[in-house]
Structures are given as structure tokens and as C-alpha cells.
Image 1 (tube, rainbow, N blue to C red):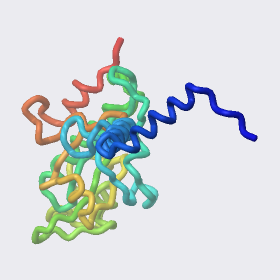
Image 2: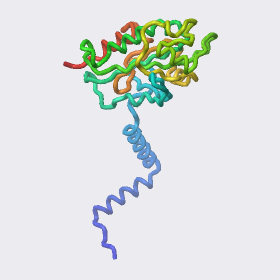
Image 3: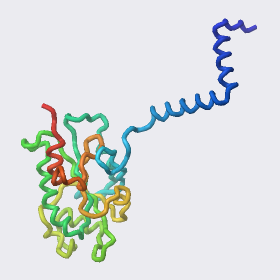
Image 4: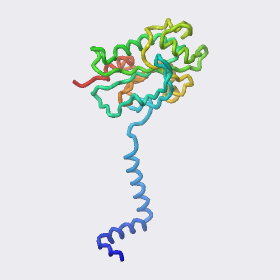
Length: 232
């Protein structure tokens, strides 16, 4: 024989019965509960390519000088990073090995990679990860390949980059990864309209500057110098 529930329990049961007997009240209760779940589980930062957005997915393979290996941009993110603290920022360049402007910018990109180095006493922060995303634009004369990407990065001979041997491009050989986007999947996801296009990304994966916003900072290097400041 089960003991009789105390009177206060019966009152709670009667209240619950009242809710279920009232359809409008029940619907309102369910809506409020649903909104609470969404508020708790939703990411407050939208994914996109504007300043303040979380950087979109970028998964492919990348060439690092030794060979091609799986690449996932998200693996570079540190969700625990806070503004003013040390952390590894990122400069992301969308480029095409047959783009004349990309050939001209190759030297400056290498300079940024060398300057924004933790070992450089003039740079008071952790390494900045420079990442090139190599696309093949749908333009006559733009006919790239993984071999051509390798030649562009390593500044080696045997392949043509923007109507010249890749070894004659500006700057020295690069030490950072080149991501394969010959199929233009990343360009579509990131809504990139042309090359070169640049994004500066905070250590936590939030976009801090894009080359569509040159009114404040002239280029990615200037943006990193101004934004990646560590509190004293």
C-alpha cells in the first residue's frame, strides 16, 4: 500500500492539471521553454566574412614545403583567448598563382611572416600565422595546379606564374602553408570576389579586418600591428 501524498504535493498536481487543461496556456509555456533552450544553446556570434563574424569553415589540403597534408583553419583557433592577451593572430590571403597583383604582393606577404614572429624583439606577441589560399579564377590564362602552387610558394623554376617563371616572383621562398582551393569552394564560402583578398583573424577565430576595409588600415600588416596589441 502506497502512502498517501502530503497535501502540498496534491496542490502541485492540481496546478499542473490546470495547465494541461488550458491549451493556450500550455502552448505559451512550450514557446517560452523553446526560446530558453535556443538562448542557452545558440552561438551568439554569427558565422560570416564581416568584421565581428566567426570565420567560416576552411577545410582542404595544404602544401607546407614538405608535402600536402590535411588542413583545417579551425585548428588554429583558441576559444579561450581574450582581447589584450598574447595569442596567435592570422593573416589569410586568397590568391591565384596567375594573378599579377598576387605575384607583386608575394614579397610583402613574406615580409609580414618574417616580422610578426615571436622571436622578433620588435614584435611583442606570439607568431602570426600567415596562410595563403590558392584558387584558380575562371579567367582566360589562369590555369593553375598543385605543382604550380608549389613552385609559387617555393619560388622554384619550371612553372609559369602570371606569364613569368614562378622563380622570378617578388620576395623570397615562403615558409607558410598554401591551401588548395583550385575548385573555388572556399572562395564561394568566404564570398571572395577577386584576388588578392585578405582577412585578419583574431586568435579566437573572429574576423577583425578585411581588405574591403582599407579606410582605417591600409593593409593586413598595418591592421595586425594596430589590433594585435598586448596589454602591458
